[in-house]
Length: 83
Image (cartoon, rainbow, N blue to C red; front, side, top):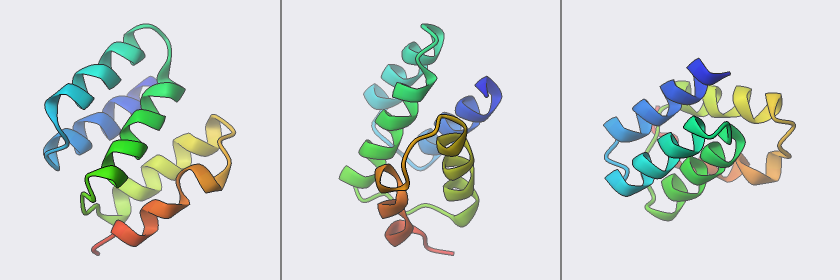
């Protein structure tokens, strides 16, 4: 799971999510709070209306399911997919 959250954070950084959000997410991972880190990434991608590709969405979805996160907490990102 750590590899997947690290990949998601890296992809978000490449999409120009603000650096402070990236730092916060990485710190959460360091403190074994990967679920919260994922929530931060999801929320901030949506808040900043950052366009994502289907691959990133699928990674988010896969990790969210591993954390047993309900779809309503990430499904809204579908509207930001540009593929």
